[in-house]
Length: 497
Image (tube, rainbow, N blue to C red; front, side, top):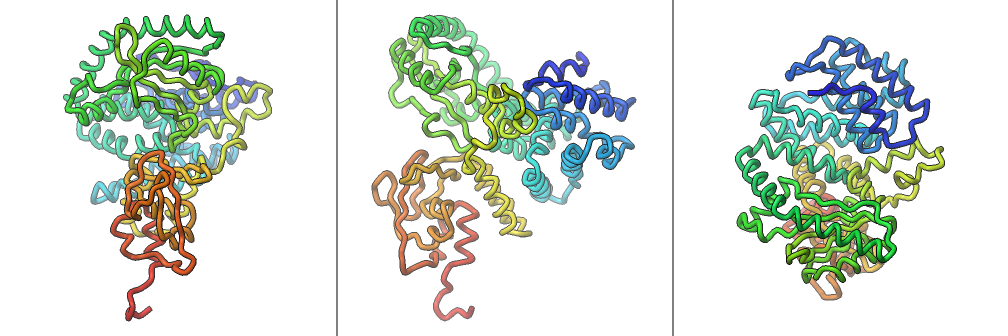
C-alpha cells in the first residue's frame, strides 16, 4: 500500500494553484499530520493516510482549497486533543464551521432499531446540507475512502457500514449528481452485502467486455476518423464497462439474460459544444444503424439531478450492439462531480480562466436545486413526526425519479408513480388544493393516474372548490401533497372543528 503525500493532493487540484491556496492546503496538511501522529488504522497504516486520501478525493472532484483543508482536518477534533476553537484560531470561521459540521455528523449514537439509527443519521445529514452542502460532500469523500478499506474491519461491521452506505450515502450522492461517488459506493457496498452475486456479475461483465473490446476499439477508430473528416474537434473518446450494481439490477429485471442489456458496452464521446453533440449523433447514425426507440436526449430534457447527455444504441462493427453517449466537457464534469461543481466558483471567480472548469453559481437556475429547498421546508413542516419523515424521505428524495413538464416547458421533478395531484402540489399549494382535472400529453387522465417519465401534464383548477379531497390521500405519493391535503382538506359534514 503506497503512502500518499501532499503532492498527490496538489497534483489532483483542478483549479489554478495559487500561492494562497497551496499555502492553506500545506498548513492544514502539516497541522493534521502533527495532530494524528502515532495513530494507526486497522490496516496498520498511519491514521493520517485516511485524511490525505479523503482530501485527495475532494481534489479529484474539483473542490476548492478551503474544502480540501477541512477534509484534511475533518477527524482532528474527534480523534485528537485539538479542539474546534484551536482550528478556528488557526484556519478561520469558514473552515471551523465545516469541520464542526462533520464532527456533528460523526456523533450519531446507536439506536434500538435500524430505522431510528437511519433517521437520526438522515436528519443530521440534511441539517448539515441546509447549512453548507460542502460538509456533506466531505462526508461522502470520507465514506468513499472508508469503503475502499472496509476489508480490514470485522464482518459484522462490514455489513453495518455497507448497509448504511447503500441506504444513505448512495442515494445522497445520486441526488447530488456526483456520479463518480454514487457508482463507486454502490459497487463497494454490493461487494460486501452480496459477495457471491458480486463475483458472478463481475465475472460475467468482464468476460463479456473482453469479448467486445475489439469491437469497441474498432468503433472508436471509425468514429475518430469520421469526426476528423467532418471537422468536429472531439475532446475525448473512450470505452467504458457498466458498473456492477446497476448491471446486477438490470440482470434481475431481464431474468439474468446479459444479451438483453444494451448499455453493457458503451463508448463516450466528449465534444466542445451542444451543436457538436447533435452533429456527432448524426454522424454516429450515418456510420452505424441505430436501434429503434433507443435514443434518449437528456440534453434537451435533463434528468432530475441535472444529468445531461445523448444516449443512442447502435449496431456497431459486425453488428455488435453498444451504447454511444455524447456530451460536452461541461456536461461530463457535472455528471461526474454533480453539485460539487456549484460551489467551486467561490474560490476561483477572480481568475481569468475559472469558467473553463465549471459554471458560475449565478448561472444555475433555482429550479436545479429546488428539491433541496423543498426538503428544508418539508422537514420544518413535518417537525418531529419521525415515521412520516423517514417514509417521506424514502419516497420524495431517495426513490427513483421521473420528470414531467408543464405546458410552459418547466420541468417538475417527482418520484416514480407520482400522480397529477402530486404534480399540482409541486407547482404550488393553491393549484394542488383546487385541482379539478388533468391532461397527460393532451389527453384527459384521472387524478390517480401514474405519470410517465417526460410527459407534459396540464392541470385544470376549480374557481369555487379550493379544498382538497381527503380521498386523494389514498393515492398521492409525495409528502408535500400528503401534508397539504391533511392540513387543508374539508372535514366531513357534522364533524366538529
